[in-house]
Amino acid sequence: MPKWERSGITMGVIAAVLLVVEAIDMATGGDLDEYGIVPRRLSGLDGIIWAPLLHSDFAHLIGNLIPGVVLGFLLLMSGRFLWVTAIVWVISGLGVWLTAPTGSVTIGASGIVFGWLAYLLVRGLFNRDVWQVLGGVVLLAVYGGILWGVLPHGGGVSWQGHLFGAVGGVLAAWMLSDRRDPGNSEPRRPELKGGPR
Image (tube, rainbow, N blue to C red; front, side, top):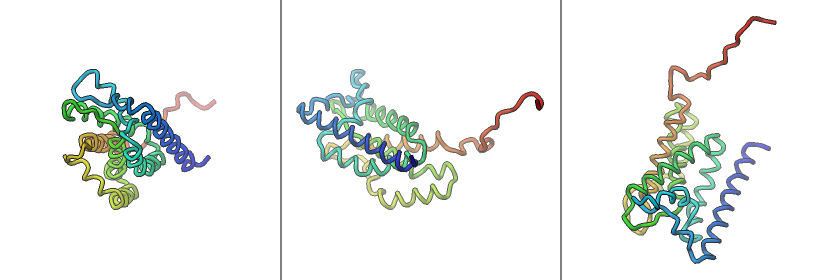
């Protein structure tokens, strides 16, 4: 199966899971939403795990799915999906837990979406790859407007999740850079011991 097909199927499965979770949440009167991130409370730390899977309603979910499916597909094609997602998930969640308003409960996958976007925007700079840089420029032209979401604003939107998701994306791009160690950019070949047989 081609990589693009596997990537498309994977994002389709992820989208389906999120839709099912939201359907269950709606059927239970939004009871699942209480498992989001509750800032600066030990009991709210587990919300870091669950918050990206939960949304306030289908409009909230679709708002994240539309860019998320595209960005997730591109990330899957890059071969760094699991590591980037894990780094962004933790950094975004911890950032919200540390800085969100007291008494709030934060849910939604937008921190992950912002992290994926930030990673795809800057990875070419760390890798010194002109094609990745050009790809980042195209993404900036298409999705750059949503980056305003990292700034503080009202309306019950977690700009903290957006900001720390983007920070996580940049951190992931640096940590996973192909050229992080310029003196060892080529993979090391294993040494063969012993003479010919």
